[in-house]
Length: 334
Image 1: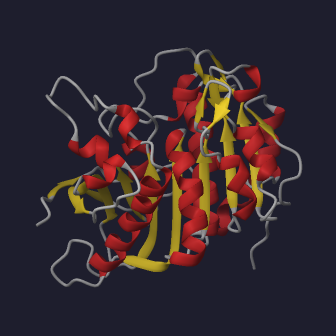
Image 2 (image 1 turned 180 degrees about the vertical axis):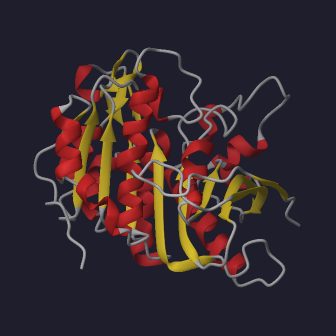
């Protein structure tokens, strides 16, 4: 039985002017516990559920479906992404921000989040759970008694992830090509790779050429030692945005952008960071991550100038972003 709580969110501005702006829909949020099967491929596979927050536009669907995975370590409480979810849902998408099952089930007290962060490092279990969450939402859309009844368009699905969440999303995107559901877009927010010192354990870079769907990679400066720095800067570093972008040779529909001056945590919204520029950096992460989803999953032609077009070039000229070479030309819409 799912434990579901619903709360109404605020109404957005009447007309969105940029991809990160709130749209016209009011939003309802729901906290759910999604049952998942035993998966023997990792220790966390013995745990029975994944917690998630589901954001639904108040209106008549079906809407595109977006799933977002948070960073390492810990849980949704430590890595709030409700700002992303509320914005996208207000623009007419069902959005799920999901935990990992170890984060959902191994919290010993209210004062501590996940104590066993090394448990949830199975690529197989965690990437498959992303697809299980999507399949759950699609099935719920066909259930008359569900709050998602009739709300999900299973032909328009995107996934996104931050850091370790982006690592798992990469593997999920590849699995989805043969296992389903079919994906329309992938958003990698300052992705990490799984490393222990100089050793890469299960590299996302080695499998990235298998990704076939439209993919955007958004990078921070990747300069915070230890861990939150680029892998070329030392064995204590795990971030790989430029390397993963270069490895996406299986799709011509790719785009890479660095948010100039940003740090790894600037992706989080609502943000607990107080460093100068955090709000602007977050805005840029949301602008380009959401534009990618809005174009490829929702078919929104109003965002094309942000996809290597005039608006992106203006942000680059203003010193807010740096566009990686070799990306797709700005798409056009009929």
